[in-house]
Length: 198
Image (cartoon, rainbow, N blue to C red):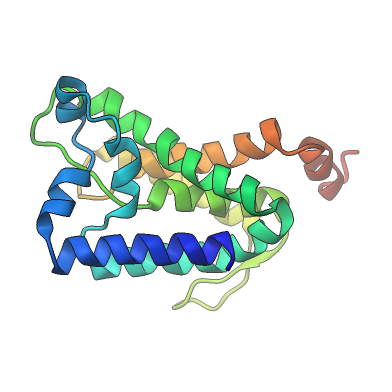
């Protein structure tokens, strides 16, 4: 079994159990920065990534993880891919911890940070590949999609409305690129070669 399949299976099982079997799993595992700082429940930085607000939230994240994770895992290997994903979950939790540690009402959950790390790892390795939206079947070069996604996330983050954790999306995306640069040999040479700069 691939790491991608394992992550999808584990995340889906825990999320569905929390949503439809025992909501105490959801309440205990979601990331509440106010609680983490005061009760030292640092595990929440990781466990929140295996929980989702509803079935649609879970389905979208696992859909993206499946399509981009399979390709990235084949290139990085299972261990590096798992390390990228798990570290992406942790790193993407940091902005929420920093910005909401004094807010007892704030809570967040979802695999988006790790998924964005995988997506942007793919974009870094394959910047000229086409990415398609389900409802808009027009090919978009991966690097253009990435820049557009980041610009949208920054804009929405500054607005500060809604329930989507755009800060986690941004942190996860940036980490996906940094991980490859720091921990995968020749990544910088690869991207320079793709764009004809080396």
